[in-house]
Image 1 (spheres, rainbow, N blue to C red):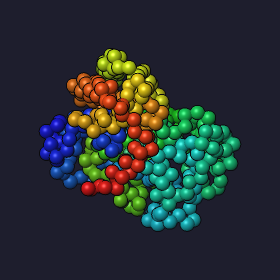
Image 2 (spheres, rainbow, N blue to C red; image 1 turned 135 degrees about the horizontal axis):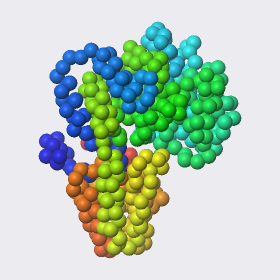
Image 3 (cartoon, rainbow, N blue to C red; image 1 turned 45 degrees about the vertical axis):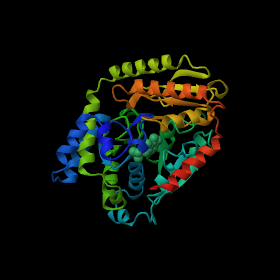
Amino acid sequence: MDDRLEDFGLRPLVNVSGTMTGLGASIAVPEVVRAAEAILPCFVDINDLQRKASAAIADATGAEAGCVTASCAAGITLAVAACMTGGDLAAIERLPVTTGLRDEVVLLAGHAVNFGAPVEQTVRLSGARVVLAGQVTSAQRYHLDGAITERTAALLFVVSHHTVQYGLPALETVLDVAHACGVPVIVDAASEYDLRRFVAAGADLVVYSGHKFLGGPTSGLVAGRRRLVRDLFLQNLGIGRGMKVGKEGIAGLIAALRAWGLRDHAAIRAREADILSSWQQALAPFAGVQTCSEPDPTGNPLDRLKISVQPAQARITAWDLADALAAGDPAVMVRDHELELGHFHLDPCNLHPGQAAIVARRLADELRRAAAHPHGIFTPFAARADRRIAALMRWPD
Ligand SMILES: *Cc1c(COP(=O)(O)O)cnc(C)c1O
């Protein structure tokens, strides 16, 4: 693995942060690598290949049809476009101009998150306008009813740890209200394991990432009602062109779906539980460091190790520890959404054999170094955000 990185002059990196696009998303399974390699030199009728993908997606999700997109984000933009244009080819070529179309998308205010880009912008790229419903931490049926008008093209429901996890209506309530008004519901299920649940609940279009838990190529998977999926596929004649998925992405996703069906999920969970307890044991001797296993917030079958750092005893803050791990060799990238609260998580789902022990060793090394530091390592958290923006601005250096 590390030799391949050296060819590019890149340093080795251990990913315990999760399926992050910025780190290369996930470990593509061997079936995907083989499928992409096999199809890359070939000519194919892309629409035929998408037909095969539709059948594979229908089979895996229980939906009527499916389509592969460049990413989940592209899938959301194209799903919104489909809900606005239907099969009107002239309207498809006119987007993002939406004159004469229903062009509003209702989104719960608590779902207006940033997944690496703002979900609202992902909607607006199609030409649609976003209408927020309710407040960030509070919404009910009447907020949705009040937001839906004759201009509403769709309702977007986001399933993610990024969204507010309380005070908001469940998908079933949202489906009930939207469908009573004849409005289709798009579900952003980018990071969800369960490929059938949202289709079974009655969502009209469900969008997943191909490169997250599925271990597929960089791609998106859309499953849903036959007519709407066709209308989304037709967007390739318009705004979808700049978001196109190649033959290797489509073939790779079909292979990923097959492999997903054969994966031994129970064995993977058992392996991950062992990894979590090995990390807990490795960290037990360190003062000011507490660990506990935490279930995934959206109910994916995955636990992560939460590491809380008391700076006074550990002689380092949670964010300084995360940064030290990322700066070392090999770089260890932790799950860092909640650093300012004094904790981070270790996600075991993207580790190659032998890497769990490297993570434990690197943690112990950095904690020992902090304990021996004459003043402790306590930088202000705000400076960290500024440093990250500054580093971005220096690219490509
Ligand atoms: C990752 C993610 C996306 C974007 O997925 P891509 O396939 O990388 O475009 C969208 N929404 C949510 C909730 C995500 O977690």
